[in-house]
Image 1 (tube, rainbow, N blue to C red):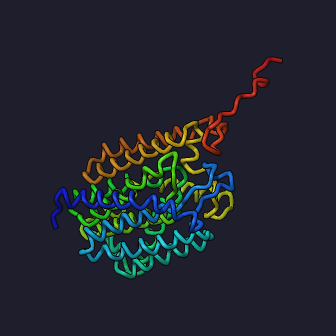
Image 2 (tube, helix red, strand yellow):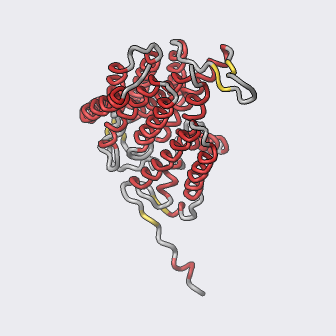
Length: 362
């Protein structure tokens, strides 16, 4: 299969138009369905009720684009079915609320359905010899389910600031799509362009100051569809598309997720316990507003996306150099000594005044 410029850009444009058109409808529907994010705890950084049903617009944008440009491929059907199921799961959570264990169980069921429909990670590159290492049935099932659920939660946990999850998902989709394209994987490319288009169409309503949130119906779905579409590239390019490239591009949310798991395990808390110590919260505590915090994280994600592209071209020295730049940026943020003196509740960031009496000589 070959791809023209129209084949590549049309999915993005259609998804963006549909998502843009349906976002106002999702804002209108949200209060009627009870899908409102009310800031009842200190973890929220907004200070007024917000609609959180924007996932509907993202879903419709992606589905319309995939139906028009990729339905002829058998592999795309399981991805669309899984996307639909995870959207329904997230929508129920947005409207009714859901315990973390129930949500995790639902994500696992969605992943199992996709696996049963034939979307599987069947082998990876053999780093200790030539060729690929094929998985047995148990390993194939386990790796596929873990991959889908892990990336779903990685993106979901990033949805803490206006425009953050949508922007990082869009950047990730474009980077993975480009790597898929230069490796001749055109169906994953079209799928990723559809994902990026839906994010782009939604972002004008979601960037700070946001008019709506995507909710779990959007954040979980974006993680799931990115993970599922990347699996489609395993037939010809085992590790390149499915393991290394998405892991590099999604390095920021994956890192944030791992740190959250470690942090909560040390404190003997449930992994699903919400807190205000995610990377985006730490950036705001360092003195950045929502816009600058989000743009900074976009920049790091973009750098990691370029790292993934360089890796796919075997430019390892350049890849390592840029990765170190991203690590240094995150390191500076996480070690900021003034991070405990900034409040991130509400619209404004207020820096506490130092106690002058401490500096006075007795």
